[in-house]
Image (tube, rainbow, N blue to C red; front, side):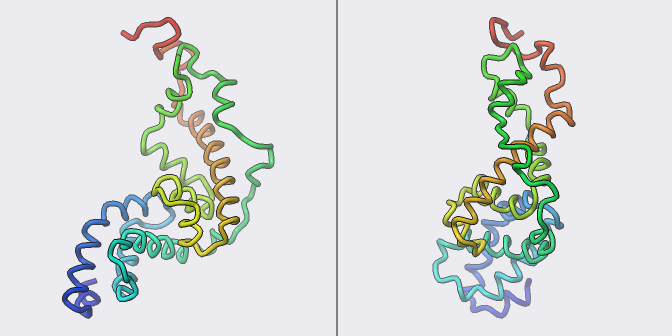
Length: 208
């Protein structure tokens, strides 16, 4: 990226370097969550694209969102085939899925007074990332931008250059798929193993 930065004016060069330095950890985290490509390669290519178009950034305060959009679009370019392919199994083929309700029905921690919190607490950051990577890419990107990066649905639609209604529909499907995959992953990974044996405190039990 050095030669590209060198082509900028001194003030632009300093501004871009500071912006990249501030945002680098978040960009790497975003790249890992999106998955499907090498995070370092994705971030590097995104910063190269940022160098080429830095003159288009009119407001430095918008720099973080601008870099997020560049990285997301770079990722989409690299995974274009995956983003076009239809799901092998429609999200709602077996009807709507509610993790909240299935936890109540299955009652994996029968001695817990905070059942839903305990189930969600069993998932580490690594587990959540693994579940995210099971969600189809075109749904995953909307899920990550909206619920992890914290952008509004309108902002996500702008970043992905899609109609707001399309993004809202994809977010609905993404949540359904994510909840379904969370439950499947919990069973496959043994995250709730031993729960029925009363290993969690609550409902009259005292933690040792």
